[in-house]
Amino acid sequence: MKFMITGGAGFIGSAVVRNLMARQEHEICVVDKLTYAANLQALAGFMDDPRFTFERADIVDSVAVKTILDRHSPDIIVHLAAESHVDRSIDSPGGFIQTNIVGTYTLLQAVLEHFRLLPQSRKTSFRFHHVSTDEVFGSLGSEGYFTEQTPYDPSSPYSASKAASDHLVRAWARTYKLPVSISNCSNNYGPYQFPEKLIPLIIINAIEGKPLPVYGNGANIRDWLHVDDHAEALLSVATRGRPGETYNIGSNSERQNLDIVTAICTILDRLRPRSSGVYAQLITHVSDRPGHDMRYAIDAKKLRNELGWLPSRSFEEGLVQTVEWYLANADWWNDIRSNVYGGERLGAQLGSSPDHQPVFSRSTSSSR
Ligand SMILES: NC(=O)c1ccc[n+]([C@@H]2O[C@H](COP(=O)([O-])OP(=O)(O)OC[C@H]3O[C@@H](n4cnc5c(N)ncnc54)[C@H](O)[C@@H]3O)[C@@H](O)[C@H]2O)c1
Image (cartoon, helix red, strand yellow):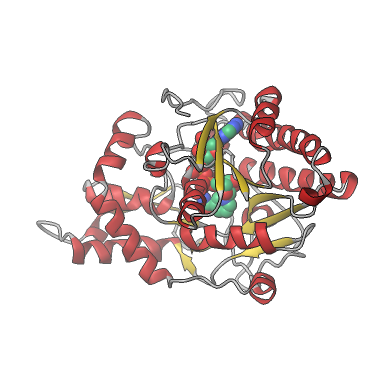
């Protein structure tokens, strides 16, 4: 099979690529613009593999996307390219509208043209799988779960842009009969996550002895999934899920943000004790995120019952592995902290910058 992974140099996309490369049987083409969030180190080792190709391109660029589709003629496209950080979407929503909505539209048009020209034998197994988030469903109270039938009710510019992209994908399936699937997943954590997101930010700040910012009272609840379990679930849906269907992905690991931060502190107290005191002394409550959803929780029964997917690790195991990974990979995040993002607060001041301000790109040169 020939896979095309958009956003394959990002946190989840690179986990999907590592999973596919380990299977030894597929050809993989990554399409990525290499924004600040991308990291080619996560794909290190594959660049010279004949089964792997990297194409630096912006999914908003229809000519580039068509050229790449013609060149690689994929059977399965897993679409992860996106602006993904809620706090950045509060400061500068324009880039989210461009990539997540216009980019998905551009991709869908080019993919439809590609699909229509495939021979019937390849049309049968073709799939465009769109990777989305549980944030499109808005906020839950203390009870209940998001199911595939939960109405959309996004709160942030990020989740609204992802909701819009989900609607576009469904429309292209219903109107043009493009074989698509969609998955909505809960919060991910694991290796190579850009240190603007809660778990890597807290681990790195703690290692550096800096304050550990907790938004508001820290009672907000997220349902956590290890990125490698998400990658496995995505490939199950993209290769075996029913066309036209949506699958929720989650592992029943609801935790309050404050409990996550405290758990990281406890792990670090054991793995790398401070010279004096404990890491929890660094916890600092800061002003809440505007429009902060209270609780997300996923009902993933459909995925489990239809495709037999189950997470391979508990949250407790995965969190320890993740802290160990960040301790062992300081070179990776030191480079980001020094050159790309130093850990400053984002998304706290409403209207702090013009909404058409582009999200800056890394000046890394492309390879292959
Ligand atoms: N991180 C999570 O917890 C989570 C949870 C559920 C769903 N998702 C979804 O999964 C996908 C991947 O998330 P992630 O956390 O890996 O994000 P990420 O920010 O780590 O990576 C995104 C990747 O997309 C690339 N990209 C951005 N704009 C692009 C453009 N215009 N053209 C081509 N490439 C572009 C970036 O360079 C980067 O490599 C996103 O669609 C996100 O909405 C993420």
